[in-house]
Length: 372
Image 1 (cartoon, rainbow, N blue to C red):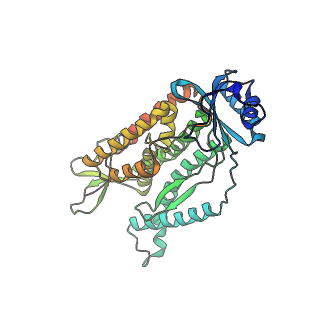
Image 2: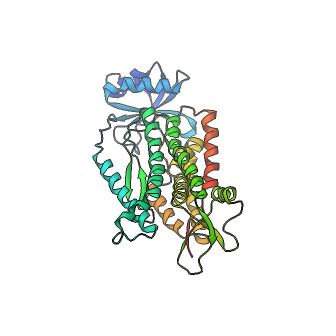
Image 3: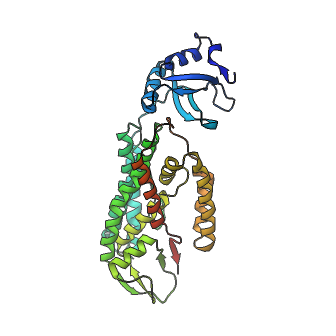
């Protein structure tokens, strides 16, 4: 069937039952069984009979639940309103926290080991020297953990099923490859999507910024080593300004630079992680924000971001080639819509969304690490 008038459908079949259940809140004009949709999906086009799309969606969801169908409200071609009926209900399974706890413990050990080695401690000769790795370990994992629990509690607040954070132990110069949560049910509105996406970076920054300034206060400005082989952290606009505020001068300059205390290294690393997550692409935190602001044009934004990564990778840091490949092949540039695309976002969230883009610009570091 394709674009058939609704009065040609028998009331006794499932299509008629779906339509009858929503007739007082959604005026159906036509229906389609699109060949590109999953089998059994039905798309009604029409108009809302009530101005509050959130109430309409919840009403439809409740009425379709006994029929084992899940609704989606979205804009179709030409701006028409589509009510999509997908067979099956979303029943998120509870997740066991055992894996989360084990990964966290292993990550703590991994970060602590790397942080201790970064302090020049030989653990075979001085096992007690492991305490030198504690400042970075505690501070950095606090930043990562606060970031992820920001997502977690925002999702729980909106009734979105979510797992506890999964920490990833990895033998890098940080001892971890970060952490993530997994949504077990979709967001219903763009407001929910925005809140869940933005909560992580803002929560993480609330820890990373004071940790950075405390760490800089404990750091020293010294002459750069004459020998090669040391690593220099890169400057973002914010980090450059922070060093100006603490030390009263632009650094590095005249062969001098700040030698980071472990807390300053943790704060700088937290800002780097936040900046990466704020890239306005795919299902990164910044991708959620971008989708709320730009809708389906976010896919175009994603391709622009990948292109800029390649350019910046050529001129500043070739590590961006790897991340461009990761985003293009694994993370993806597109973003799935929420279940109710029609619900408005609100002016306040839009202002915060644009402010988040500004935060990303201030935190972005063209060349994060340079081996001198």
